[in-house]
Length: 243
Image 1: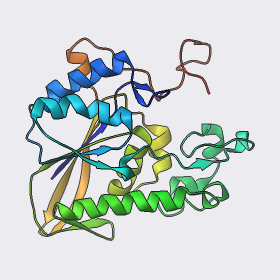
Image 2: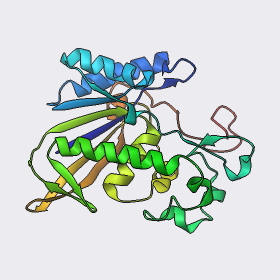
Image 3: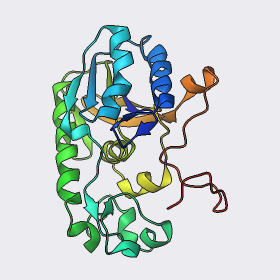
Image 4: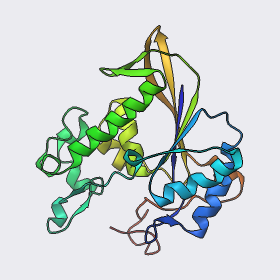
């Protein structure tokens, strides 16, 4: 089985939709996606993901199943340098979060007080339970850190979702801390991340990522990827996003 995780297009968060650039990105994405043989589409309930999926679904005359658990992963925390305000769980300064060794561990990243006293553990478990339930519908049942193959297949499943949520899915499928992905990776708008199952012993499958954040459909059309989700490359560049 192949999983394609697609981040939404360049967002206009004020209206939970896309900017004009984001709509162009979604159209270019559809030209790529319509060539694929897709078994099923799953989409976040948020507007920016739905608007990204729409051109693909229209081009292919398909429908998606809309899933609340695919919405952006956004339980609030009190970031150490902003104790008086709530921030999203995955927006930290590197010089702060990297001081805590447990954040690098797939088994212990939830333990520090900042997460333990928030809704992060509960929401993470909810999202990953829903992911596993969906994969079981497609023939792959989670057992420990791998999947029992009940119905081997080479189907393609597509998720239209969000960067922070994508990192949660990947952390579960690849058995690593999401903190590493939230802070060490960045998926540009309409980028595609691809994972395949590998069944090296009959009946036992694991997921392997073959590409992360692929935006070749944008480059092929001469469209520069949007900057959304990144921070300034150099601090003095005032045209780019600062903390």
